[in-house]
Amino acid sequence: MRRYVAVGGICGLAWSAALRGWMVQLAGGGSTFTWMTFVLVLLPGVVVGMLLGWAAYLRSTGVAPPRKLILAPVVFASALFDPVIFIGLIREGTGGGALMVIATAMSAGFVLSRKGFSWGRAACALVATLGLLMLFGMGGMAAPISSPRGAWTSLFGLCLILVLCLASALPYPTSARVPLPVVGGLCGLAWACALRSFMTTVAGPESEIHWVGTFAFILLPGLVAGALLGWGRRWTVWSPMLFASVLLSDPLDIGSLLDDGVGGGAIGVPLLGIIGGYAAAGRGTVTKRAVAGGFFVAGLVVWAVTATAVGGPSFSLTTTHGLWASLLYWSLLITLALGASVPLRSSSTIAAAKQSRPSGPTGGACSSTTDDSTSRIGAAGGAPA
Image (cartoon, one colour):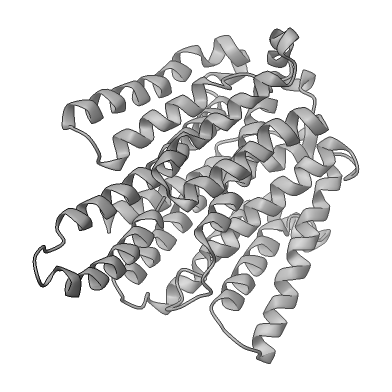
Protein backbone atom coordinates (compact mmCIF):
# COMPACT_ATOMS: atom_id res chain seq x y z
CA MET A 1 0.00 0.00 0.00
CA ARG A 2 2.82 2.41 0.82
CA ARG A 3 4.26 2.01 -2.67
CA TYR A 4 0.94 2.71 -4.33
CA VAL A 5 0.34 5.77 -2.17
CA ALA A 6 3.90 7.04 -2.69
CA VAL A 7 3.74 6.60 -6.46
CA GLY A 8 0.33 8.27 -6.49
CA GLY A 9 1.73 11.23 -4.56
CA ILE A 10 4.66 11.60 -6.96
CA CYS A 11 2.38 11.42 -9.99
CA GLY A 12 0.06 13.94 -8.33
CA LEU A 13 2.98 16.31 -7.79
CA ALA A 14 4.08 15.96 -11.41
CA TRP A 15 0.50 16.53 -12.57
CA SER A 16 -0.10 19.64 -10.46
CA ALA A 17 3.33 21.11 -11.28
CA ALA A 18 2.58 20.55 -14.98
CA LEU A 19 -0.85 22.14 -14.50
CA ARG A 20 0.88 25.21 -13.08
CA GLY A 21 3.10 25.20 -16.16
CA TRP A 22 -0.03 25.19 -18.32
CA MET A 23 -1.34 28.16 -16.34
CA VAL A 24 1.91 29.99 -17.09
CA GLN A 25 1.32 29.53 -20.80
CA LEU A 26 -2.22 30.87 -20.50
CA ALA A 27 -1.21 33.90 -18.43
CA GLY A 28 1.92 34.68 -20.43
CA GLY A 29 4.21 37.24 -18.83
CA GLY A 30 1.57 38.09 -16.24
CA SER A 31 1.96 34.83 -14.31
CA THR A 32 3.53 35.17 -10.85
CA PHE A 33 4.56 32.62 -8.24
CA THR A 34 4.06 32.86 -4.49
CA TRP A 35 4.21 30.37 -1.67
CA MET A 36 0.46 29.99 -2.09
CA THR A 37 1.27 28.20 -5.36
CA PHE A 38 2.59 25.30 -3.32
CA VAL A 39 -0.25 25.35 -0.79
CA LEU A 40 -3.15 25.76 -3.21
CA VAL A 41 -1.89 23.95 -6.34
CA LEU A 42 0.99 21.53 -5.70
CA LEU A 43 -0.04 20.25 -2.27
CA PRO A 44 -3.61 19.43 -3.38
CA GLY A 45 -2.12 17.56 -6.33
CA VAL A 46 -0.02 15.43 -3.99
CA VAL A 47 -3.00 14.73 -1.72
CA VAL A 48 -5.29 13.78 -4.62
CA GLY A 49 -2.58 11.54 -6.07
CA MET A 50 -2.08 9.74 -2.76
CA LEU A 51 -5.82 9.20 -2.32
CA LEU A 52 -6.19 7.80 -5.83
CA GLY A 53 -3.08 5.66 -5.29
CA TRP A 54 -4.74 4.20 -2.19
CA ALA A 55 -7.84 3.48 -4.26
CA ALA A 56 -5.70 1.73 -6.89
CA TYR A 57 -4.10 -0.42 -4.20
CA LEU A 58 -7.46 -1.48 -2.78
CA ARG A 59 -8.74 -2.39 -6.24
CA SER A 60 -5.60 -4.44 -6.93
CA THR A 61 -6.34 -6.52 -3.80
CA GLY A 62 -9.99 -7.02 -4.73
CA VAL A 63 -11.29 -4.70 -2.01
CA ALA A 64 -13.82 -2.04 -2.97
CA PRO A 65 -12.39 1.43 -2.18
CA PRO A 66 -14.39 3.61 0.25
CA ARG A 67 -17.00 5.57 -1.68
CA LYS A 68 -15.74 8.82 -0.15
CA LEU A 69 -12.61 8.51 -2.30
CA ILE A 70 -14.80 9.37 -5.29
CA LEU A 71 -14.67 12.94 -3.96
CA ALA A 72 -10.85 13.09 -4.07
CA PRO A 73 -10.75 15.68 -6.93
CA VAL A 74 -12.74 18.08 -4.74
CA VAL A 75 -9.45 18.78 -2.92
CA PHE A 76 -8.52 21.00 -5.88
CA ALA A 77 -11.25 23.41 -4.77
CA SER A 78 -8.82 24.56 -2.08
CA ALA A 79 -7.64 27.12 -4.64
CA LEU A 80 -10.77 29.09 -3.72
CA PHE A 81 -9.29 29.66 -0.26
CA ASP A 82 -7.22 32.38 -1.90
CA PRO A 83 -9.29 35.53 -1.21
CA VAL A 84 -8.36 37.07 -4.56
CA ILE A 85 -9.54 34.00 -6.48
CA PHE A 86 -12.70 33.67 -4.41
CA ILE A 87 -13.66 37.33 -4.78
CA GLY A 88 -12.99 37.17 -8.52
CA LEU A 89 -15.24 34.12 -8.77
CA ILE A 90 -18.09 35.83 -6.93
CA ARG A 91 -17.85 39.27 -8.56
CA GLU A 92 -16.67 38.55 -12.07
CA GLY A 93 -17.10 34.82 -12.54
CA THR A 94 -13.35 34.37 -13.05
CA GLY A 95 -11.17 31.90 -11.20
CA GLY A 96 -13.62 29.04 -11.67
CA GLY A 97 -11.08 26.85 -13.45
CA ALA A 98 -10.66 24.67 -10.36
CA LEU A 99 -14.40 23.98 -10.26
CA MET A 100 -14.39 23.14 -13.97
CA VAL A 101 -11.55 20.67 -13.52
CA ILE A 102 -13.35 19.02 -10.59
CA ALA A 103 -16.69 18.73 -12.38
CA THR A 104 -15.06 17.34 -15.53
CA ALA A 105 -12.93 14.76 -13.70
CA MET A 106 -15.69 13.52 -11.41
CA SER A 107 -18.20 13.28 -14.27
CA ALA A 108 -15.77 11.36 -16.45
CA GLY A 109 -14.90 9.04 -13.55
CA PHE A 110 -18.60 8.21 -13.13
CA VAL A 111 -19.01 7.57 -16.86
CA LEU A 112 -16.04 5.19 -16.89
CA SER A 113 -17.40 3.31 -13.87
CA ARG A 114 -20.67 2.34 -15.57
CA LYS A 115 -21.77 0.19 -18.50
CA GLY A 116 -24.78 0.60 -20.70
CA PHE A 117 -27.11 3.55 -20.97
CA SER A 118 -28.56 5.50 -18.08
CA TRP A 119 -29.74 9.09 -17.81
CA GLY A 120 -27.21 9.76 -15.06
CA ARG A 121 -24.36 8.45 -17.19
CA ALA A 122 -25.56 10.45 -20.19
CA ALA A 123 -25.74 13.65 -18.13
CA CYS A 124 -22.25 13.10 -16.73
CA ALA A 125 -20.93 12.37 -20.22
CA LEU A 126 -22.36 15.68 -21.39
CA VAL A 127 -20.76 17.57 -18.48
CA ALA A 128 -17.40 15.86 -19.05
CA THR A 129 -17.48 16.54 -22.79
CA LEU A 130 -18.34 20.21 -22.34
CA GLY A 131 -15.64 20.56 -19.69
CA LEU A 132 -12.99 19.00 -21.94
CA LEU A 133 -14.00 21.22 -24.85
CA MET A 134 -13.87 24.35 -22.69
CA LEU A 135 -10.46 23.42 -21.25
CA PHE A 136 -9.17 22.69 -24.74
CA GLY A 137 -10.50 26.03 -25.97
CA MET A 138 -8.72 27.86 -23.15
CA GLY A 139 -5.50 27.20 -25.02
CA GLY A 140 -6.54 30.05 -27.29
CA MET A 141 -5.67 32.43 -24.44
CA ALA A 142 -1.99 31.78 -25.14
CA ALA A 143 -2.22 32.12 -28.92
CA PRO A 144 -4.66 31.28 -31.72
CA ILE A 145 -5.36 27.53 -31.68
CA SER A 146 -4.41 27.42 -35.37
CA SER A 147 -0.86 28.45 -34.40
CA PRO A 148 1.75 26.01 -33.04
CA ARG A 149 1.80 27.61 -29.58
CA GLY A 150 -1.98 27.73 -29.30
CA ALA A 151 -2.38 24.14 -30.50
CA TRP A 152 0.29 22.89 -28.08
CA THR A 153 -1.21 24.78 -25.14
CA SER A 154 -4.69 23.44 -25.94
CA LEU A 155 -3.40 19.88 -26.29
CA PHE A 156 -1.40 20.30 -23.08
CA GLY A 157 -4.45 21.19 -21.01
CA LEU A 158 -6.63 18.53 -22.64
CA CYS A 159 -4.11 15.74 -21.96
CA LEU A 160 -3.67 16.73 -18.32
CA ILE A 161 -7.42 16.69 -17.66
CA LEU A 162 -7.88 13.39 -19.52
CA VAL A 163 -5.24 11.79 -17.28
CA LEU A 164 -7.13 13.04 -14.22
CA CYS A 165 -10.40 11.75 -15.71
CA LEU A 166 -8.94 8.25 -16.02
CA ALA A 167 -7.52 8.38 -12.50
CA SER A 168 -10.87 9.57 -11.12
CA ALA A 169 -12.39 6.19 -12.03
CA LEU A 170 -10.06 4.33 -9.64
CA PRO A 171 -12.21 4.84 -6.51
CA TYR A 172 -15.08 2.90 -8.13
CA PRO A 173 -15.23 -0.90 -7.64
CA THR A 174 -15.16 -1.45 -11.40
CA SER A 175 -14.52 0.71 -14.43
CA ALA A 176 -14.10 0.45 -18.17
CA ARG A 177 -11.06 -1.53 -19.24
CA VAL A 178 -8.85 0.89 -21.13
CA PRO A 179 -5.93 -0.84 -22.91
CA LEU A 180 -2.64 -0.09 -21.16
CA PRO A 181 -0.95 1.12 -24.39
CA VAL A 182 -3.74 3.72 -24.70
CA VAL A 183 -3.27 4.83 -21.09
CA GLY A 184 0.49 4.88 -21.58
CA GLY A 185 0.21 6.88 -24.79
CA LEU A 186 -1.98 9.50 -23.12
CA CYS A 187 0.35 9.76 -20.12
CA GLY A 188 3.36 9.95 -22.42
CA LEU A 189 1.79 12.76 -24.43
CA ALA A 190 0.92 14.69 -21.26
CA TRP A 191 4.47 14.10 -19.99
CA ALA A 192 5.99 15.41 -23.23
CA CYS A 193 3.77 18.50 -23.11
CA ALA A 194 4.91 19.15 -19.54
CA LEU A 195 8.55 18.68 -20.54
CA ARG A 196 8.07 21.22 -23.32
CA SER A 197 6.63 23.68 -20.81
CA PHE A 198 9.74 23.22 -18.67
CA MET A 199 11.94 23.85 -21.72
CA THR A 200 9.95 26.99 -22.44
CA THR A 201 10.45 28.17 -18.88
CA VAL A 202 14.21 27.62 -19.09
CA ALA A 203 14.57 29.27 -22.51
CA GLY A 204 12.41 32.24 -21.50
CA PRO A 205 10.85 34.64 -24.01
CA GLU A 206 13.20 33.41 -26.74
CA SER A 207 11.52 29.98 -26.76
CA GLU A 208 9.50 29.28 -29.89
CA ILE A 209 6.97 26.55 -30.63
CA HIS A 210 7.17 24.97 -34.09
CA TRP A 211 4.94 22.42 -35.78
CA VAL A 212 7.86 20.15 -36.60
CA GLY A 213 10.24 20.83 -33.72
CA THR A 214 7.62 20.53 -30.97
CA PHE A 215 4.97 18.19 -32.36
CA ALA A 216 7.10 15.82 -34.45
CA PHE A 217 10.20 15.61 -32.24
CA ILE A 218 8.81 16.01 -28.70
CA LEU A 219 5.08 15.30 -28.47
CA LEU A 220 5.02 12.40 -30.97
CA PRO A 221 7.97 10.60 -29.31
CA GLY A 222 6.24 11.07 -25.95
CA LEU A 223 3.04 9.53 -27.29
CA VAL A 224 4.83 6.56 -28.89
CA ALA A 225 7.18 5.96 -25.94
CA GLY A 226 4.29 6.03 -23.48
CA ALA A 227 2.29 3.55 -25.57
CA LEU A 228 5.27 1.20 -25.82
CA LEU A 229 5.95 1.37 -22.08
CA GLY A 230 2.29 0.64 -21.45
CA TRP A 231 2.55 -2.35 -23.79
CA GLY A 232 5.13 -3.71 -21.36
CA ARG A 233 7.54 -5.73 -23.49
CA ARG A 234 11.07 -5.83 -22.10
CA TRP A 235 12.71 -4.19 -25.12
CA THR A 236 10.33 -1.23 -24.88
CA VAL A 237 12.32 0.03 -21.89
CA TRP A 238 14.51 1.77 -24.48
CA SER A 239 11.57 3.62 -26.05
CA PRO A 240 12.30 6.93 -24.18
CA MET A 241 15.35 7.25 -26.44
CA LEU A 242 12.88 8.26 -29.16
CA PHE A 243 13.24 11.77 -27.73
CA ALA A 244 16.78 11.81 -29.12
CA SER A 245 15.22 12.00 -32.58
CA VAL A 246 15.06 15.78 -32.10
CA LEU A 247 18.74 15.85 -32.95
CA LEU A 248 17.81 14.76 -36.48
CA SER A 249 15.59 17.78 -37.04
CA ASP A 250 18.59 19.81 -38.13
CA PRO A 251 21.72 17.62 -38.04
CA LEU A 252 23.85 20.30 -39.69
CA ASP A 253 23.04 22.86 -37.01
CA ILE A 254 22.43 20.95 -33.78
CA GLY A 255 23.65 23.88 -31.70
CA SER A 256 20.67 25.99 -32.74
CA LEU A 257 18.31 23.47 -31.16
CA LEU A 258 19.53 24.51 -27.75
CA ASP A 259 18.55 28.13 -28.33
CA ASP A 260 14.80 27.49 -28.25
CA GLY A 261 14.83 24.80 -25.58
CA VAL A 262 14.04 21.91 -27.94
CA GLY A 263 17.32 20.02 -27.97
CA GLY A 264 18.45 20.35 -24.35
CA GLY A 265 18.84 17.00 -22.65
CA ALA A 266 17.64 15.08 -25.73
CA ILE A 267 19.88 12.19 -24.77
CA GLY A 268 20.57 12.80 -21.07
CA VAL A 269 16.95 12.97 -19.90
CA PRO A 270 15.75 9.68 -21.48
CA LEU A 271 18.94 7.87 -20.47
CA LEU A 272 18.54 9.05 -16.91
CA GLY A 273 14.94 7.85 -16.91
CA ILE A 274 15.96 4.41 -18.19
CA ILE A 275 18.67 4.13 -15.53
CA GLY A 276 16.21 5.12 -12.84
CA GLY A 277 13.72 2.60 -14.22
CA TYR A 278 16.29 -0.17 -13.88
CA ALA A 279 16.94 0.82 -10.28
CA ALA A 280 13.22 0.84 -9.46
CA ALA A 281 12.28 -2.34 -11.31
CA GLY A 282 13.81 -4.81 -8.86
CA ARG A 283 15.87 -6.61 -11.51
CA GLY A 284 19.55 -7.47 -11.27
CA THR A 285 21.79 -7.56 -8.22
CA VAL A 286 21.51 -5.15 -5.34
CA THR A 287 24.88 -3.66 -6.30
CA LYS A 288 23.85 -2.93 -9.88
CA ARG A 289 20.58 -1.41 -8.75
CA ALA A 290 22.37 0.69 -6.15
CA VAL A 291 24.79 2.01 -8.76
CA ALA A 292 21.92 2.79 -11.13
CA GLY A 293 20.03 4.51 -8.32
CA GLY A 294 23.14 6.52 -7.45
CA PHE A 295 23.46 7.76 -11.04
CA PHE A 296 19.79 8.70 -11.10
CA VAL A 297 19.98 10.64 -7.84
CA ALA A 298 23.15 12.33 -9.08
CA GLY A 299 21.21 13.50 -12.11
CA LEU A 300 18.64 15.12 -9.82
CA VAL A 301 21.37 16.77 -7.75
CA VAL A 302 23.10 18.16 -10.84
CA TRP A 303 20.06 20.29 -11.60
CA ALA A 304 20.00 21.67 -8.07
CA VAL A 305 23.63 22.77 -8.49
CA THR A 306 23.34 24.16 -12.02
CA ALA A 307 19.78 25.56 -12.04
CA THR A 308 20.79 29.21 -11.71
CA ALA A 309 23.57 28.80 -14.26
CA VAL A 310 21.09 27.37 -16.77
CA GLY A 311 18.03 29.53 -16.17
CA GLY A 312 19.31 32.54 -14.27
CA PRO A 313 18.69 33.89 -10.75
CA SER A 314 14.94 33.20 -10.94
CA PHE A 315 15.72 29.47 -10.93
CA SER A 316 17.33 29.58 -7.49
CA LEU A 317 15.75 27.04 -5.15
CA THR A 318 15.23 29.83 -2.64
CA THR A 319 12.71 31.52 -4.96
CA THR A 320 9.15 30.31 -5.50
CA HIS A 321 9.60 30.22 -9.27
CA GLY A 322 12.84 28.28 -9.05
CA LEU A 323 11.45 25.77 -6.56
CA TRP A 324 8.39 25.14 -8.74
CA ALA A 325 10.54 24.67 -11.87
CA SER A 326 12.83 22.27 -10.00
CA LEU A 327 9.92 20.25 -8.62
CA LEU A 328 8.46 20.03 -12.11
CA TYR A 329 11.76 18.80 -13.57
CA TRP A 330 12.44 16.33 -10.76
CA SER A 331 8.92 14.90 -10.76
CA LEU A 332 9.06 14.47 -14.54
CA LEU A 333 12.32 12.53 -14.25
CA ILE A 334 10.94 10.34 -11.45
CA THR A 335 7.72 9.56 -13.30
CA LEU A 336 9.76 8.76 -16.41
CA ALA A 337 11.80 6.31 -14.33
CA LEU A 338 8.63 4.75 -12.94
CA GLY A 339 7.27 4.38 -16.45
CA ALA A 340 10.53 2.85 -17.70
CA SER A 341 10.38 0.31 -14.88
CA VAL A 342 7.06 -1.13 -16.10
CA PRO A 343 8.47 -3.32 -18.92
CA LEU A 344 11.24 -4.60 -16.66
CA ARG A 345 8.91 -5.42 -13.78
CA SER A 346 6.37 -7.05 -16.09
CA SER A 347 8.97 -9.28 -17.73
CA SER A 348 10.54 -10.22 -14.37
CA THR A 349 7.12 -11.21 -13.01
CA ILE A 350 6.43 -13.42 -16.01
CA ALA A 351 9.91 -15.00 -15.79
CA ALA A 352 9.46 -15.72 -12.09
CA ALA A 353 6.08 -17.35 -12.74
CA LYS A 354 7.55 -19.56 -15.47
CA GLN A 355 10.42 -20.65 -13.23
CA SER A 356 8.01 -21.60 -10.46
CA ARG A 357 5.71 -23.57 -12.81
CA PRO A 358 5.55 -27.23 -11.76
CA SER A 359 7.18 -29.79 -14.02
CA GLY A 360 6.27 -33.40 -14.64
CA PRO A 361 2.93 -35.01 -15.35
CA THR A 362 0.97 -32.32 -13.51
CA GLY A 363 2.75 -29.40 -15.19
CA GLY A 364 0.24 -29.18 -18.01
CA ALA A 365 -2.68 -29.02 -15.63
CA CYS A 366 -1.18 -26.09 -13.71
CA SER A 367 0.01 -24.21 -16.78
CA SER A 368 -3.15 -22.32 -17.68
CA THR A 369 -3.76 -21.24 -14.08
CA THR A 370 -0.26 -19.87 -13.77
CA ASP A 371 -0.54 -17.94 -17.03
CA ASP A 372 -3.82 -16.32 -15.96
CA SER A 373 -2.45 -15.25 -12.59
CA THR A 374 0.68 -13.92 -14.25
CA SER A 375 -1.31 -11.68 -16.55
CA ARG A 376 -3.24 -10.30 -13.58
CA ILE A 377 -0.09 -9.69 -11.55
CA GLY A 378 1.60 -8.03 -14.54
CA ALA A 379 -1.35 -5.72 -15.08
CA ALA A 380 -1.52 -4.79 -11.42
CA GLY A 381 2.22 -4.25 -11.29
CA GLY A 382 2.09 -1.79 -14.17
CA ALA A 383 -0.81 0.19 -12.78
CA PRO A 384 1.01 2.31 -10.15
CA ALA A 385 3.59 3.62 -12.58
